Length: 191
Image (tube, rainbow, N blue to C red; front, side, top):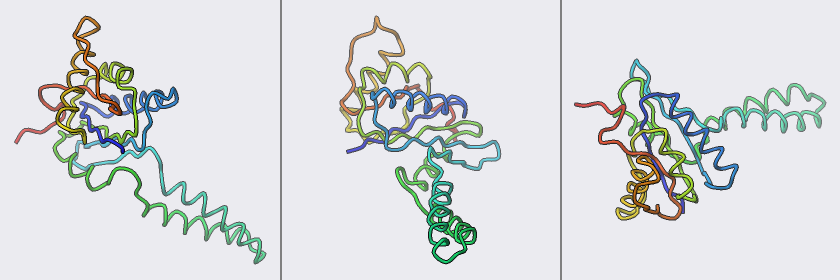
């Protein structure tokens, strides 16, 4: 089962750095990611999703290949590729895998303009190795899908990682991906 983690950051650059770090940790097999999306609240208040995978581009590429193959059968490979690319792009734009886009947009309405949040769906992680590397970026753990006890263990592990190795040794729950905590959401609007 995958776990969801949402972390708010003061700016888009930091959220992108954390996502890049998670991809690096994934290559080291320390974390297995199902999805990682950076959500930005622009200065004009609009919400922009920065998906890790562009489904429209993937669909267009696949459609062009299959359209070209089918076009060869009818002696019109360029026309087939063009039609296939258009159909693939249309199908790809309708594809939504991982974290629900509407959920991310709704939750990100609380960010202040200029802030960003990182939404991560984690299948498995070596929390004791991931948390210290992610905690150094700051931010606030906004939401998780962990149980209350597991979330408290994660928050304790984050606090220990932020205060340094001299802090109490608190392990994070199995399968948890770390995200730092702050008293108030950096980027959260106050009503």
